[in-house]
Structures are given as C-alpha cells and as structure tokens.
Length: 413
Ligand code: UD1
Image (cartoon, rainbow, N blue to C red; front, top):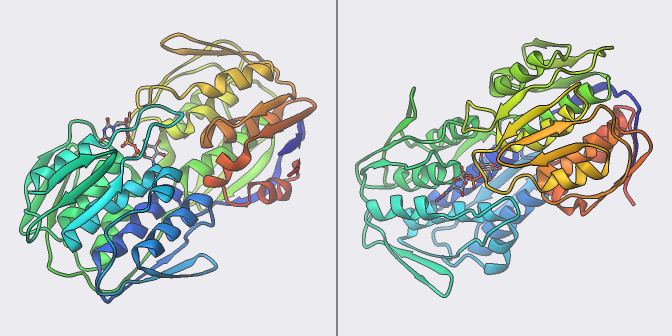
C-alpha cells in the first residue's frame, strides 16, 4: 500500500463485524447435525475465508451473501482438519472442541509458532482431557477421541486464554452434565460466543468474575446470531483520526468494549466524544502527552491494539512506555516504525519517543503491526510504502477504500 501522508482524515467510517468474534461463532456450527446456523455481520476477510474453507473441507455447506453466512450441517462430518488450512491460520484450532464433542473424534495438525510469539494449545488440550478425552500427539498432529460423550467437569484455566475458553465452552455444550470453567477470558468475543451457543439451545451462564457455567445438551437446533462490531478495527480508525489531527466519526462501536483505549487516549489529551455507538474524534492543536501502557487480558489494554497505540504515541511529546504481557514477541513493528523516524528502544518495556514521522518503505510483520504502519504512514510526511499487506487483509475489510472515503491518499500497488 502506497500512502501519501500528512492529510487530516475527515468523514465517517463504519466498523466491520469482529474477526475474533466471527471465527469462534462460525465454529459453533460444528455442534449441529442436520441443522443450520445463520450469522449476520460476518466481515469479508482472509481469515474468515480460511475458516469457511476449513468448514467446507469438513463437510459443512456454507453460503455467504453480503455479510450473512449460512452454515448447513449434514448428519456426519469429517474429523480430519487439513494441514494446509490449519497452517494458514492458528484460529483453525477452534474446530477441536466442537468436533470432538459432536463426533467423538478429531485430528488437528498442531498450529506452529507465529511471528508474535509461541502460541501453544496446551490449555485447550488439558481441559479436554479433564472432560475425559484421550489425546495423543503423533508427528505434530493432535488425535483426540472420546468413547460416548465428554463429561462435564469443573475446570480451572491456568491463564485466561481466549482460544482455550472458546474451545472448552463449545466442548462443554454437548458434554454430559454441567461444566464450570473458572478463570476464563472475559473478552467481549466470549459474550458473543455465549449468545451464539444459547441460540442453538445451550444453557450458558457467564458469571461476573471470570467463570462460566454450561449445561451440556444432546443436540443443538438451528439458530441465528449477529457478530459484534470489531473493537480492534474501530480503535485503528480512532487512532488514525487522532494521529492525523483529523475530524472523523467511527460508527457501530460498543464504547464499553474499548474503555481501556479511550481511557489512555483521554490521559494523553486526545479530543473525542462518545455518544451511544459513535466515537467522534476532533482535531487538536496540542500534541499527545506520553503515557504508560501494559497489555493485559480484557478488560485490560488489548495486545491487539498495542502496535497501533505505539504508532500514535510516536507523535507524543516525550517518552511513553509499553509493556507487553500477553505475547512475547509483539515488538517486531518497532524496527519498522524506527525507519519512519520513531525512536523505539526495546528492553523489557518499550520506550516510544519522537514527534514527527516521515515516510519510508516498511514491512508489515504481522496483522496489527501492518495496521500500525499504515496509520503511521497516514500521519507521516511524504510517501510510505507498506509491503506484505497480505497480513493486513487477514483482519481489515477494504481498508484502502475506507481510508480513501476519509480523504486519505492511499493506493494498492
Ligand atoms: C486471541 C485472538 C488474538 C489476541 C489474543 C489475546 C482470536 C482469533 N485471536 O488469540 O487476536 O491477540 O486472543 O487477546 O481470537 N497460551 C498458552 N497455552 C494455551 C493457550 C494460550 O500458553 O493453550 C498463551 C499464549 O501463548 C499467549 C497467551 O496465552 O501468550 C494468550 O493467548 P490466547 O488468549 O489463547 O490467544 P488466542 O486465543 O490465540
């Protein structure tokens, strides 16, 4: 993407459906037999297409019309997830729990490491074992099976992993008896998953302080649910507005989902208003104040917004610090932002310091790093070229068109 920076953004942008909510709720269809799941507000993204391909490879008939996706599930499905698709996307591991619970058997190539750090699935497997599954790993492939049904249990997650919470909630949905999972992730995507499980007939109760109680059922029925708005995409546009000193409205946002980011923006002195589901960013003559950030599981500051926030803080007056506590290797973007004039030093924390960015040729090292470089390019003087856009298309629908509608000069080359 070629970006001619330095133009204040102006206008309105609407948030897409959330990638990280759509992926698990699509996997919910694997709990059905001879029934249909309908989802609205499904974004058009590479990762979503990979999940559609994976579900089709397993035997689900999928129809997509605009942002509505319909999943017709036959009485039997295949239980082997193809390696080529699992390698493409780590979230493919979300088929593990529901396939095992519904068909008693599943083979899943272990998703490997990735550029933001090691991402094991030990917590997913530990929980499934506690529910009675037999798990055997051979030549990098997980083979899980259960005679009869999984058994409801009390499970404590050693870390509130988003993916493990989702896999185990889906597995518990068809288990015999009640499952209580403690220390679960409480990201808004988990509420969306709970609502989708309820829509196919599973009694799910999320408890205030990090627990969930699920009554296993024999068989799910057809249902329909809506994917929540993408809080990470919304924040990317909010930060682009702030960084370019623009005047933009970001629509279809649930403000309570992005409290951590709005609080930091307020602390940094950004000018914005919050009205129902719209965030409006106002131009400001003052530079941002530096702030300190530590990423944490929800409702803490989201790791997926950390690189974009670092780009914004590159324009603050002074030194900001960022501590990443969720993934080990989420600072690959720093080297790229430094090519644009930022001064980011990495020790245990990251210091971000600079007041002006200039255009440069840079590389998207992963999805959110790519987003950070694009918004940095929008605020930088001169031309920026972001390579390896393939990462960005995994999570941002029509980002070039949306930015052009806000007056940005961007072009795909
Ligand atoms: C999800 C999101 C991702 C986001 C992350 C944290 C999707 C598709 N992806 O990823 O965008 O950055 O949540 O908010 O929703 N861990 C283990 N063992 C496990 C599972 C996780 O050690 O079995 C560790 C991981 O290595 C990582 C941390 O827990 O350090 C968080 O991972 P997790 O919450 O599981 O993230 P994902 O579900 O992979």
